Structures are given as structure tokens and as C-alpha cells.
Image (cartoon, rainbow, N blue to C red):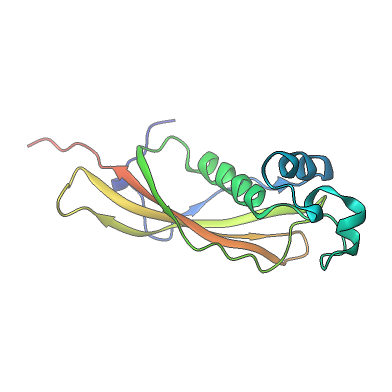
Length: 150
């Protein structure tokens, strides 16, 4: 696949993201290493929590969303990530949830001071198999522009 540049992007262009399945084992393994709160790693404590059971760490959910978005972007001439938009978590991710992402390119802007690059955001909404939104966010990137001949 050919490398895509900022110039190749279109406002509103959708990304074809693969679904993500969260297993109990993966949720607990991630949490034990990175976010060892009881509602992520202890089934008995999680059952007594306000969540009523084990839930995935928001960090794991964000990481999984990042992965499928990067995969869906294909070969992009990304120079750097600039920021992650505010992350909204309206519902938890639970074991055996299948998360699908609706993602698109937006906020395309070519740099005035450095016209060899542009900025673009991939905004996404992650939804579980019940149609409940579990995460909303976006990633802002600096992307190389195609070289133009004079």
C-alpha cells in the first residue's frame, strides 16, 4: 500500500476500524500491570463495587482504540502525535464486550509557517454490542505533505 500524506485526506473521510473484543483474562492482565484497581482485577470486590463486576481500565480501552485506528490509517506519513482530545467514558467496558469504532478524519489544516506539513484529527466514538457508547475521543496528528516540484 502506498504511503498517504496530509494532501490525500478528505474532511469527514471514514476509517475502516476492526472490532475489538475484551476478554476477562486480558482485562485483568492489563490492569494488574498498569491499573491495579480492585474493580479491574478482583472479581469479588468488583461485584461489590458500583460497577457490579469487572470492568476494563479506561487506559486499556484507549490503547485498544488507538491500535485499531492506527491499523485503519494504513501507511500514513505521520510526523508526530500532537495531543489526545478529552476522553469521555459514558459506560464501562466489560468482559466479552465487542467494541466497534466509528472514526473519521477531521479538522484538516495545512501549516502556514511550515507548508511541508499539515494537521489532522481522527475523532472516534467506541460503541459496544448493545449500542452503548463506551468512549469518545480523538487524536491530533502532524502529517507530512506531498513534496511539490517547482
